[in-house]
Picture: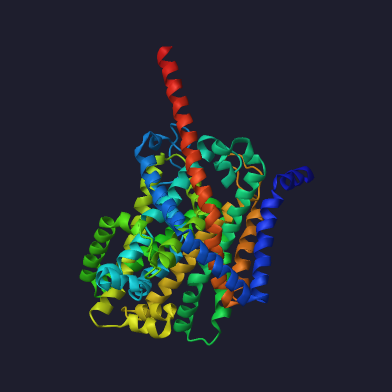
Length: 518
């Protein structure tokens, strides 16, 4: 027993585990002590990255999407993530549900209600035309093909690394081995892994800072309690932590069950709004128009840089989102790759676009166009409300209250968001736990104690940041900064995968030729 414990301790990578956590905690303390100065510095860095180097994010985003299509349609798409005759671990629905819920599903639900309102207030929309024609297009663009392209390219790269090559180091650096060679085990590889874990932690706290206040507002609205939003936020985070910890410690079975519950509640909400919201025709027609406009102008939207800086729209929105998704690429793709064993690379990419992009588009089309329909018909004026208050949480409450049986809808939205957060944290905690090990054998899971520790660590940072609102904004900037080096690593992983996949296909072809000659 003692020897097993010692062996477990020896396999843990304490440098990768402790340095990012310590660094982020120190960074948070700085935010608390000198919030104004730290905010000023981070704002300058963020402005520099977005204003001077913004094209970097845009090029990577479009490039990765093109690579995803190429991989799916090429001979690489036939590669099975596992043994050539291996069958998928999960049925299509369970697999798709876990895939969708492992990412930014809670954020998707939050932004679906109201993101068009923020675009409607942007001067760039006035430059392009009418609110009706463009305010509903950008949410679809910013949450669909390019973001999921990041996920899926890395997912097949990690899946190939784990299930085909059988590598035991489940880390970013290991995915770069075909390109870096022996340098993977040196300082360069360590830096890559440190950047990845730092980005994972920063992205996690950013995500929770976005939608947790909405859940607090919903609870306040339902129960009419007078507790401060900060206290409620902490309570919600603790409850969410308990749920995802319980789910994670029960393995993939627990995660799969929770993901299915999420999907049922999520699509149940969408069907209810579509059928009973009174805007069915408008939702369908505006949704089709927005999808068509996005597809017709996809390349233009993906490459728009605003060179004269008339509105700073791409700097404020597109570049921010691409960076945000890059940060999240540390966790979600590993999880998607892990659950895709037995599926071909083509199935993984196409299935990801069907489930991930499809579910996202449906969410924004229904929830977003419902509130836009109320605006355009004169039944509500959410744009004026946002202009006066700048409080998106209050606006979303107003949108939900306009629905029939609003209290019930509020409860469904609350439970769905908690469940979404729990499933997202499942994938994050599992990935972070894997990073804590020097190597993991095929099929081996991190020790439950390590998983539990990461569950606690990941929730402590958002809780700490709730006591300083300025730090929330700072951390969002940290996510943007963290995404800059991560973008270069993503490109390296894509190149490494195609290099290694080519080598693998050549070996299979050579083996087939030998069998034929015999």
